[in-house]
Length: 290
Image (cartoon, rainbow, N blue to C red; front, side, top):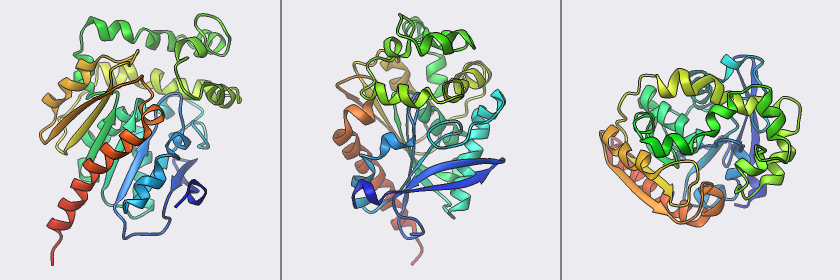
């Protein structure tokens, strides 16, 4: 397939029109990979990687989380609560008749993937998490991680951060996340009314309420953790130490480059994902009744 064959679909959950990409609409025979994006990205970030996953036999879904991409914005901050977003993902799987999926996520998408595996374990076959480790490992990371995450406090300054992020000064998005390979596209998208606030609300609704002070169960499925050694926002320890919160196989791979793994290391990430998810697909076939 080519990227032009990827179909954009919508469904309605909790009164919001939510958007997702689908490589094989209606094909119930293929095992499913669900891709989850982070800040300040959208589902379209995965378009270059989808054809390769599809060619390997998977049906690939990529969701625009609430307020991002072409999904509608919730009007209140609690509409971005991570348990509500988990509910959105489960509703998508239910709508498509998918009982269990392989989940891959980057940045906040990795956090969402961890929460899915922690709180909806029956829906997750395997995880591939990029950049962000298990929430308990993240919380337990040392001072270096706290300093690297300084921008999180800044993002909580509602109103002020919106004004400064869209400018060109020291605290602009171009400076804070200037290493993003598609920054001008990001800026164009976030200039649309309400979209920057919507993207920031995932921080404001979850960091203190659910990530730093929440309950973080162990994960039972196999996990592949991908980390980039040039990441300016996340320390390697919070990904490596995630192994202590996984009651199954945990693999850790460190790659060259910066934070934006799916954009900067597309071929390598695709290869590693396929190796990890193909093992899960083979195991599922082995366990099917004759």
